[in-house]
Length: 120
Image 1 (cartoon, rainbow, N blue to C red):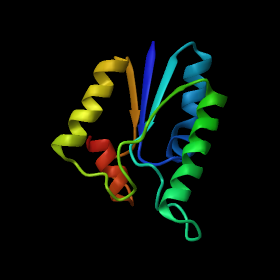
Image 2 (image 1 turned 45 degrees about the vertical axis):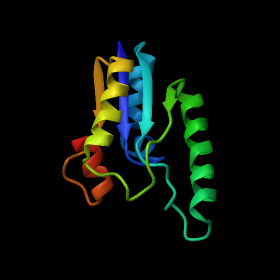
Image 3 (image 1 turned 60 degrees about the vertical axis):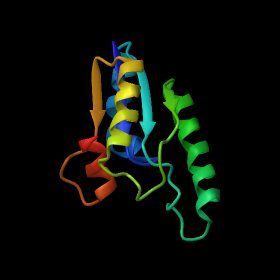
Image 4 (image 1 turned 120 degrees about the vertical axis):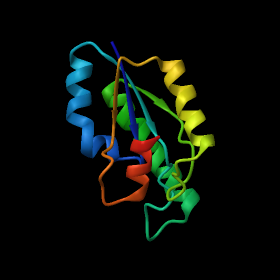
């Protein structure tokens, strides 16, 4: 079975679905993961490009530990909107990966990026 995890930012999957992802991997599932946003607003000290690069490396390390396929982010933080362009890009990923299971965030959350990711 194939699992697609669609989260908003680097670290969302690890904090909110990491345990489930590990259990699914241990059960023999192939795991694919995308952080829709790249984490570019995740620091008060680093510039957006710098922190996005740091967060990408963290996501790559996480994917390596899990043994998952990490897909490239699509937009910057605070740019996750329910638009036709993003719907098409996520749909394209779903058609490519052909998941049996999709894990994503809640439609009810404290952060708009999270809720829009769930909508997408």
